[in-house]
Length: 399
Ligand code: HEM
Image 1: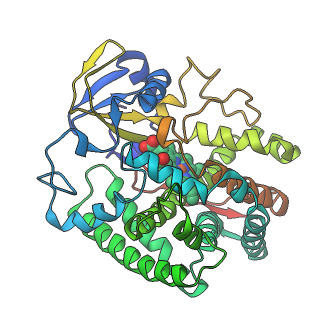
Image 2 (image 1 turned 30 degrees about the vertical axis):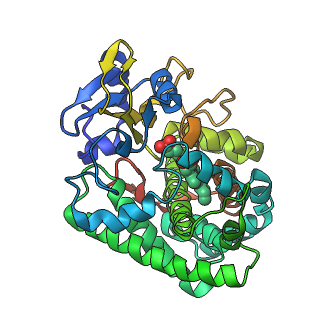
């Protein structure tokens, strides 16, 4: 099967098509999206670090203040919120935002959250175990990262049920060619979440607490601080970035283990393998399959000239199975020692939340290994519709 991100068959099994791309057309133009597909690890890794490419097309194309001239005007509130966060901007704005936010989000501060995260994961897994089983995604994978980020931001418990739908609706805009309905839903969700956060941020500025919104409201660097719009954009980014991928690593990860029973047994027999196992699960079935970049200056990739103004699609799922980098790449090896997977990205946008994601995954996989040592699948799972943010709809298990 060929690369076809709209075909559910391809979404379920993309790795054969990736192998063919790496072998035969590692840099190829994909007519339906007008993008250059980049399939090899070395090229993906190099382009992520190459400052001649960037995430924001505002640097290469004619544009209005917030969008492309042909973008429908109704999308403006969405992009206003998204571009106030660090992910969709370039230096020097990116450098400034990342430095400010990093002050409230250091690996040490995140590590201090481990007991709280362990408690949340333990409670979710206990409740799931007591019920004897069900949908692992709905009961454990989804609530964990949302609860953690809600705790961190200081979102009151009564409002937390709002976060999951907002996050899912906003992410709808990130799929290839979203429907008009999905675009409207994303705009509405971004506006509602943003209004909600403005209220919360104002309350915390007036009355700071021991939470990330209060910390972000107070960060300062040589007289510089986050504006209200930037603070809100950052919180929206933290919810989205911090949520969907973590859910997918949990769902895809357990599904990978069920499909490789010998590796599952190896991990069950030796929980000390958990750190390498989590990295391997992120490599073997990559939760975010593709990231895009705009070419800001002409580049040549693997002998192919790609002119300024083009868009490249970096195939993370393919890079993570590249035999040039990984021994026996299609084999799941929970003890794999040398594992330079690219699932957290590379370069200036390298995932700011990687230490947090690793703690959440270690705590939830660990709790499930301990509490549900015989967990088994009860139905063949189905993939959700997304290709870029690729995960299972549900994972039915018996404990
Ligand atoms: C950026 C992956 C969890 C916050 C990124 C990028 C990737 C990524 C690939 C870079 C995107 C690009 O270069 O275009 C993941 C994966 C996760 C995860 C696979 C889970 C397993 C988290 C968590 C948080 C987070 C838990 C925080 C709550 C961020 C932020 C950025 C980012 C703020 C933007 C960094 C920047 O632009 O400088 N993530 N992420 N992520 N991630 Fe994560």
